[in-house]
Image (cartoon, rainbow over all chains, first blue to last red; front, side, top):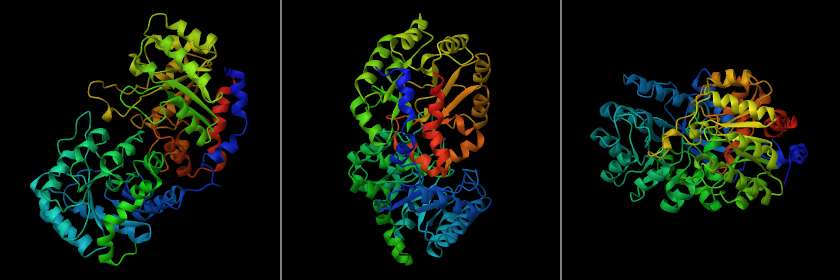
Amino acid sequence: MLNRRTFIKAVGAGGALALARAGVSEDRGPRTDLRIWDQHSHLGAVPGDTPEERMAFLVKCMDRVGVERLVLSQGYSDDKRPNPPEQFRLENDRVMRAVKAFPDRAYGSVYLSPALPEFSIQELNRCIRDGPMVMIGEIEADARCNVPGMDPIAEWAIAHDVVILQHEWLNALGNHPTESTPFDVVELARRHPKLQIVCAHTGGNWELGIRAIRSTQNVYCGLAGSDPTNGYVEMAVRELGAERVIYGSDVGGRSFASQIAKVEGAEIPDSDKKLILGGNLRRLLTPVLRKKGYKI
Amino acid sequence: MIDTNVYVSQWPFRRLNGDEPARLVAKLNDAGVEQACAGSFEGILERDIAGVNNRLAETCHSFGNGMLIPFGTVNPKLPDWQEDVRRCHEEHKMPGIRLQPNYHGYKLDDPVFAALLKLATERRLIVQLALLMEDPRTQSPLMHVPTVELAPLADVVKGTPGVRLELLNCTSQIGREEYAAALASGDVSMDISMVEGVAGLARLVRQVPLARVLFGSYHPFYYFESAALKVRESGLDEASQKAICVENARRLMASL
């Protein structure tokens, strides 16, 4: 039996060596072969007084953990359900400023609401068709994603080869009345079989969320914004296939670390990790990136 | 590296990669962990705590060549809980105990908590206190367990001179001001397993003393890599990283 004295002796030796072995000291940086692309990030809860400053901070953190590029959307302000519509425009403008400052590290994604379908189409045209953005979402608004107001947005996305990132949760304590669930995402995806849509959180309660989306092939399992609970990614790969699982972080409220860990720590083949951490997102974004002449 | 927050045995609601001790030890060894403070998931719900602690001690003895340091469970709402403290200390030679107040049904202003801290301190045992085990939003609807309310802790610590306490699973549901107050009340530390936000660890050490922040992975409930990558993401200098990953835990244990 190890007693208290031998414990103290043991922990006193080799600390620096262990630090290096554990990969937390600077002499062993992140893996670069994974080509991590993060499909879910925000400027909220990030230090800095401007979108550019906040993005610069994110880039520093990305470099530390090996994130090559991220997709940035709403959330600079704390208001989760902005009103009037001009606030959506303001959020999108902030994202475009951040992306413009770091075009090699970030893409922008449009914030809109199915409660404002006409405005949303205008904003899609402004930010994607005529602007630099490449994705839709994270949609988190005053209406669930199964409402009719979401149909024109879905049709626009299909017509322009653009992916939607949809906020949803299955909160054991109860969802907000206008908060979507994975079942709502499935309902929308079945109405629009050509739509490519990512569940931002796969329910949070992932054992339920994965099952909810399992049979709907055009719905993807987003890993962002929940605790790094052991087994999440293994179940997702087993039930959906690695091609339908997509890494995202939900920074700044979350860390890159806890969300990358879900994939890096999973007992799955390295080839699956590469798909989840970046390959799948690059595949989904390829049509719109090509249209815009962006380097993939 | 010293990991102050791992568990052995099985989580009641899910099998976990690493809930078999040989796999747990292999994982920690691969990650560069030399020592790990191990509690038992069984101690959360089982009432034969003495049996739980016997098995914990046996597991830590049988696997890892001394890597796993047992921290026995004590439930002060059970009859004769003082005997469990004695056995942890005298029979199992454990350096500390691990408490689960929300699963065991008491708040930190309950006099029995103060009595337990006093007894542990008299025996020079480190006390680890888990603030929650799972995000309340993802708990089974049949078993909702609220997060421990931290506010009463400072007064209890002030009333227990010499206590050495580590808070585990320091969720962001509790504000940084509450953590700062708890850490200022005495020899109180916190682990990093649930610290969140981009570069969240760097922000934490601007709000609480670096010397009170300890590496804890909460493996196997969490992927081990989460805590390790948080250290890397923090951008803290090597000396600070070493303090969190090694030296602060060493100092906590050194006064045994």
